Structure formats: structure tokens, C-alpha cells
Image (tube, rainbow, N blue to C red; front, side, top):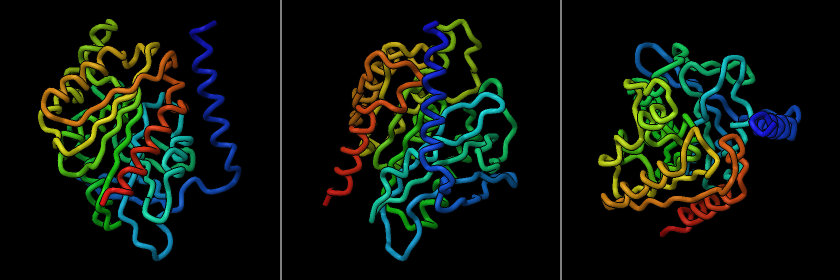
Length: 268
């Protein structure tokens, strides 16, 4: 019973967040960004309307989706941060489709999902977005598989971020998959391999939970310890007994993010 309860609760959460807005558009603007090899990545933007100049961009990278499941509730995650200085953006990762039919180019990968090419394409799309929107500060947030890309991009594009947040993320993808008796995905990139390349000025926040076998808390703690050893300002937050599917709705997670956002806005 317990094994089936968590996915059910998560689906209920997704339904609630989707139905809360009714027929209201999920995004203020959908932006189609060209990347290499004639491919495009879609971005859902919120708070970018009007003539007010905004200097902070909060980006969310969604997790992996099984076939037939569309990106939907994820578009709500950054809207709560939109204000007179902040724009929210959710990147529709390569090969994924959202609930309104937008599709980012790329072949659906069933293994080695976190390739260097895909990380590069996401990073280049964000660079284009930063230039187009005239943004000075970026906070990058990734959940689950999206967190893998966030951790990789933290080191692949070290001067792009003010802060990088990883929620329920398998920070050591090869070791974690091997530990679970699965293919280690040797051609996937892993956040722990990019620690040495992270800019020490970038804040790193890692959230995990004790009951998450997809992203074990022990590895999240090790990631933070290794990051701190190189001089990076990194911090680990435990979300207690929540499952992998429950953490996106954790009050502690959003409270910490609100504090991070406020601190950046108040920085001289």
C-alpha cells in the first residue's frame, strides 16, 4: 500500500496545481529558442510583460517524465517569485512536451539521459534568454533529473549563476544507479563531476529527504561536503521523511527559496 500511496499523492498535487488556475494561461509568453543542429527549446516565461526593467531571472528545470506524461504543474513553480524585479522561467527540456502541446526538440532517451550535448543546449538557451531579457542575476532550480542538469550546468557555465538549487537530485548519478542495481549510465553527466569547475561565488543549495531512494540523502550530503572542501558556499537541507514525489510541495523548500530570493534582491 505504501509503495503506491506516494505516486497517488503526487498526482493529486499535480491535479490541484493545474486546476487551481482553471482556464488561466500557464505562461505569460512561450519563447522558442534556437540551439545547435537546428533544434529548438521552448521556455515558459512569467512576469516579463510591461515596460518595467527586471534584473533577476529564476529558472526551473523539471524532472524526468514517463511516456504520456506532460509538463504542466512545473510551470507554476516560478510564478510565485514574480515581482517588480523578477521574471520566472521554466525550461522545457529536450524531447519533452508540455500540456499545451509545445515540444522541445530531441530524441527521447531511455538511458544516459543527461548527456553533455543536452546540458550544453540547455545552457546555451539560458545564455540567449539572459541576453534577450537583459538579465543580471540568475537563480537556477532543478528537480530530480532537472537537478542533475542544474548541477552539471553549475560547473559547465560557472559565471552564469548567482545560486544553483538541486531538489531531490541524484548528485552522483553513476554510483547511485549502480547501488540500485541499474545500468550506471556511463555517458550521462553527473553533478559531482563538475564540483571543481563551480565558481566559488555561486551559492549551492541541495535538498534531499530520508525516504528518497532515487536521490539518497547520503549522497546529497557528500556532494555538499565535497563542494565546501573546494571553497564553495554550499548548504544541505533535509526535508525529513518525504518521498521523492512529495518534496516539490515541501514548505521548508519554498521557505528557504523565498529567503534566498529576498536576500539577492536586498543585496547592494
